[in-house]
Amino acid sequence: MSALQPKTHNPDELLHGFTRTSTTSFIILAIVIHAVIVTGTSYPYIRDSYIDPEGAAKRKEEALKAEKAKLKADRDAAVGRAEEAAAKEKAEAAKGEKGKDESETGTDKGADDKTKTSNGNSDQPQVIKDITEKAKPEEIPRNPDDIGISIDDTN
Image (cartoon, helix red, strand yellow):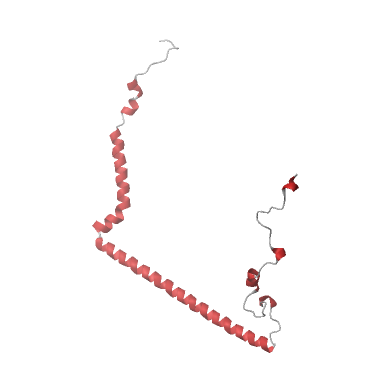
């Protein structure tokens, strides 16, 4: 055989590495992996249904009691917050009445004008007034699609 002639190989020699491994071993491995995954993810169901049904009922009852206790605590907290807000509102109303009485008698000369509305009452803070008052015509922006140039300005 000369150096220029290609070496011929027997097809059985080329496939020798693949014939040593069995396809059945890979199938068995895949079945084992699937069985482990399915069993692992189904364990809570199997435990509650077949192994310990009484324990499952107790766990379910305890979870229900814990949920009811959480709901009751949330409800109590909401009632407490509502009572707190009502007491605060009542205190502010009493404070407002006191300020109103002082302003009528003329003792409240240093009242902040920023908290007074257009009718002279201090029922709205300045921030709310600034947010809710309408814009003056010169403050209104142009249309959003108006970019401020025309086609004549581009030439």
